[in-house]
Image (cartoon, rainbow, N blue to C red; front, side):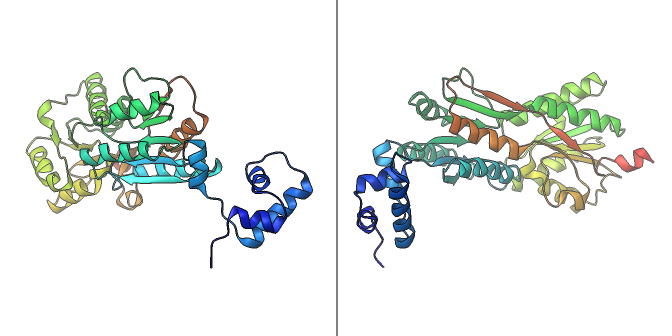
Length: 329
């Protein structure tokens, strides 16, 4: 069947196309006229052309969302929060995954700019920040999630976790479980993970416990986790911390494959909760991803003039992987 047009609706309702447009956009028309127009729209199953409306408005109603790595459990709840607010304000969401590739991050930000999105929410690294900044300066509200941007212009906001506090929370919990020699697995050079490691180091130092540089291993991908874990197990450790949820399962698998009993031989603590964590008894430090997603979308739709830096507090969910039950016993 041929798609109904605004002209078909106007003819069916006995009005002009301008009147139909006013009804669709909430303009002033009589109640009787509006009733005839909506009846025609329903009968013809007419769908307004969002592309045409965007051309006249000079901007799409779509909110662009660029995710760095969908394999991380954190991003699923983040997207849910974004989508809920976007739907409430009549904005579809255009989602892109960059697979942690810098070239894709740059290309996706450029694409969102070309699409004239209503706003942009990004979880990328720092490489595309120049174009994101220019988008904000041009009037498109942009939100950086999981980190802050120095000296942001109006329209460039950030939503992040207090990562330093997350690290300190880890230190306090491990010490409370009787752990005194901690190793860390981190991924790359993400600011969030650097801050978590710094918070962990300071928290341990305040308790009189060391975290030497040799006890911090880097695994940029899951394929590097086994070597990173092996290097830490060569040290006299009684706990391993993972400061990125993306590598949790790989680290847990690497430990159990070596016959390491958790928590009998080694405590294990990680970032971000996920569905299997309760079954495995893994203690986690969580960030309120859903609320962070909602806040990011609200910054887009409300578009405050001055830059906003929203910082959320972490929380710890204690299970058994650090020896919590044996400690209470």
